[in-house]
Image (cartoon, rainbow, N blue to C red; front, side):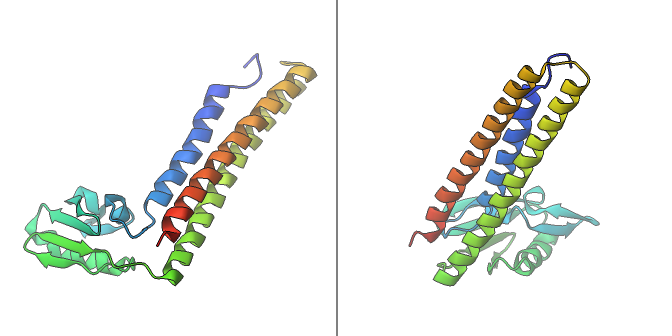
Length: 186
């Protein structure tokens, strides 16, 4: 590229890191029911491992209850087993082809564990953002070395890449703080 770096691509990749982080923290249980809580669970169905939302409808009829309506009656046992074996602390109640999953209150110890997990997710997202920055900086160095851009232009663009990185990490930290407050809320 003659003008140095593709900032649209970098922006897309930074946004991808933030989106992945949002998805990860959405699956953390905060005491309120959410259909996302079952996202990590896979069911052995039709000879392969499938996400729960591909074999059933997941809904939240009450603030502390998740309802899973299994489409194929023969898979109710497999879905029940998968939810129990996921070690998320869920104990489904089977009623025909529907599973009701009441969410118990979170104790202080479990809340602290969830905060630690959220911090791990945040660090993974920060690392992803730093990788994007590193790729952008390497691209700028190569463009400068190849004579495609001047040293001054390289410096201006590297400052812009750093600013984008800082904004992304600030967004991740803000989301983490919000999630931590939500988890620790009594």
